[in-house]
Length: 114
Length: 114
Image (tube, rainbow over the protein chains, first blue to last red):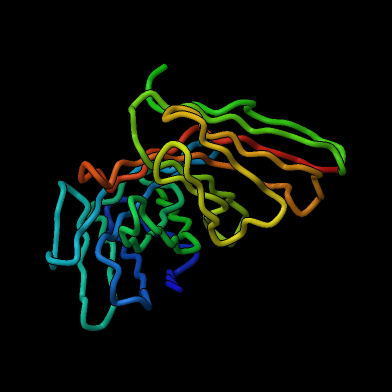
């Protein structure tokens, strides 16, 4: 089955600096890669996603890049703010028989220091 | 109801007791999922359903059962709870058939088995 590895597990940055979280996946059939943000005690919420036919996607201060050959994808947050502090999960997904088989990474706890 | 809801919010349960976690969505999504979230392990799929009347096993199905009598409801039952089932449980839904790969999560149920 799919295996998703996520690094680092914790990340501290100064406000205004950039943060990068990296993930690798094992199944070349995975074709959808969402990133979720989870604040303490809350539900995971999608912040950005990318499909396998796209190499990069940007939405204001966040961007995701995908290297299908190397099976790597990364989340980039620029100009970090204290409200970016949360746990971030990457995931790799395949559509299978009317549902999505989603495998999540183990999460990165991001702390933005004011 | 707006989106996806879960009940109860939290529960303390004696080992050996039966417990049903409820999940309801009003988005008419065909696919629904149950995940458990444990520290350091991310989100792991317990069971899924790609449409009313069908269910399937995920990564960690042992000790859990589900049913999908209609589109909106997807209850998760622990027949005889054990302490290792202490976790936060999230229900989610999506509709890949409509091109909606994003999974929408409920607010979660925090379950403690003593």
